[in-house]
Length: 543
Image (tube, rainbow, N blue to C red; front, side, top):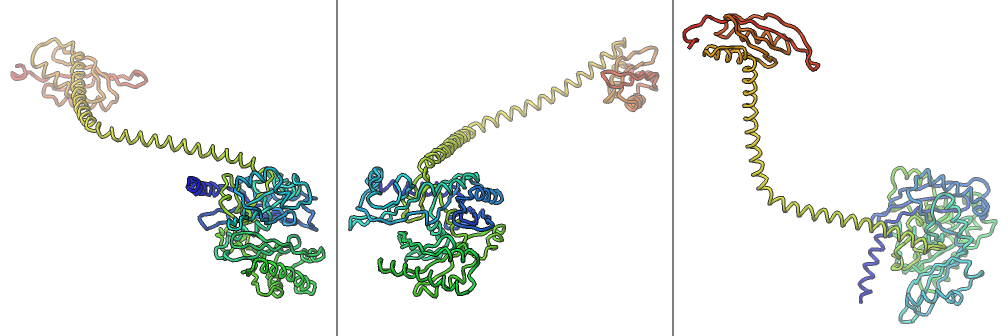
């Protein structure tokens, strides 16, 4: 019961994580290199990177073994030009380098199957390998379990480690890190997921033909594969590699022989499984396949054929559209686009998915998964810690916000007191300034020896005449004349001060006596002395 509840949660989390893995598909074949990156949003796919390089000269099946440096150089060039954003690569090996079988076994649980595989006795009993078991990289997956018959169907895929290493060596030398090693026919099958309207509810076929790869892969609605290689002579391979189909008798006979073999495979499959093949999708690395599809259709009666277009439902940005449309045969992009859909599957999402879209013959895949899993754990641990810190900050903010409401009233009272204090400080500043002015006047008038009210009024008038920029040093009275000595920042201030003194009713005439210039603390100051003749005393002034 608990397992039934946990598995859907694990499946959901595994799917979420696997969708975030970035992989570049790398299609390596004699004569060319292709790369592609895809971005998935729901059921919609977008090509983000695509590139290819062709190898000139005579090309044969041994090119990859004889010239690995040349192919790795081409791969590095196309990755650099396309600005590939990840170093993780998914690469495929030819069907001719793989052993693919669906075997029927007694019904076992996953734990029992794992234990049987651990002893190596299972593969020795159910499959026949031409070389020792330790020379192979093996992948397996349960396709379906028949509880009523107490049996299960198991997909077995194997390839020699030396053949895999040829491709991995090219990828590594180009600066990429291989995380998935698929078989070409299954890469082609994965490209089917890019098409929205292909009916996978009935058996369909995938046929690839060309100078190097020739096979028919048939898939039932549960994804169980049935694969048959199509024989093509070396002379026919050379013919296909030399030029496109041109309707000559040699090509016509080639297509007739090819179609006959495909028809025999289809008939055998339909008879064995008592079903009808819905359609065969054709792919090829040749420049054009439309004529070939028409020729094949003449010899394959009862099963419709269609050139496979993996780009039909893809979103293709404007900067990439020109590059892909330059190739007249869009099916040649199918294997690399299928590889671009692959993921390393660190957390085992594909164990919940049956079918053939998760083949991985990478020899050291478990150790790589362990490293990537550790990286992922670290990444999500950091995210979790960050979320906890943010949650703590948010909680602290909420508590602070609550306390803020209770302190707002106190703060309002505090601000009112601060406002009142500021007003008082302004009043104090004004009074201090008045005191300072009066003190300066008193200090300047120390030489006046009189207690008459007239002198008090005279000092008041002199004080009222002082303007900003004037400082008085001394005021002396002698024989009806007031002598004023002071400093000014400008001539204009002296003239204005003199003019205001002239207007006093107590002063008959004010005149400038001397003026000189001095520097105090780097400031130029005008020193002056004024002589003020007093007006005749009246009884009111003398009171």
